Length: 153
Image 1: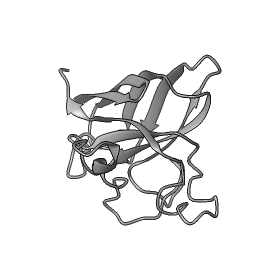
Image 2: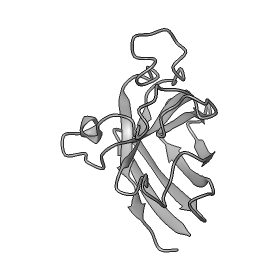
Image 3: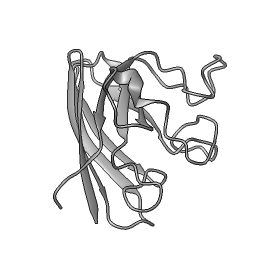
């Protein structure tokens, strides 16, 4: 069993995510809450680096160890870091529950030490026809991020 945490921070945005994976063959579960986001849909991705030394941009691109195009969490063609969208309620609250078979805490493609980034707008899952759709999902600016770190079991 692997267990990690990710404390998200941004301008006016805070949150905590807990990630767990019982074994390499089972999905990783991401649970938590985020506050300070505008109501609506917000893209969420795993990014290559756990580095915020130059702000959220130094986290690099979306984690993509298999060189795929951007897609939605249920798409066959997707990057490992494509987690979809979070839905923020009218009161600004956002409860997170994601189960994903591509995100690993155990094995050669573990995301421990990488980052999770939340965006200002909706991820189009590579289907929006925008020049950024197939590379990022065109979700707008990065608004919060945090490093995935090992947590006690």
